[in-house]
Length: 116
Image (tube, helix red, strand yellow):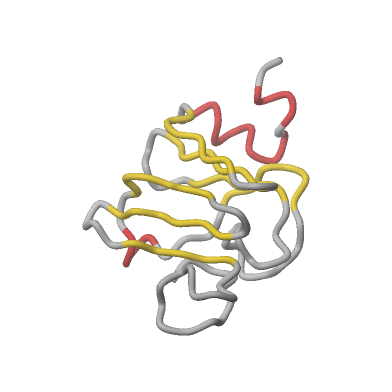
């Protein structure tokens, strides 16, 4: 089955760029596209681990709004239990999601629903 058929919201994007990388968390998934700036996400989002700025679960892949002017190109994406990381071209680590034991490494225990 072609991805375009199961992801109508992002059909145009998938016709322009190939999937470059896949990251799988416990109940959430990411596709990084070949332009290294488009990140698609779906799945559980109760801790903000998808990075959309909310905690709404997604059952279709959507484009994650990213601060590209600060982030630049994405080298790698990783998904954990209820948290996610992006490694930028400048070797900066961006994270979002559950942080109840400080796993985001930001010096606090506050969940994040956008990549910071």
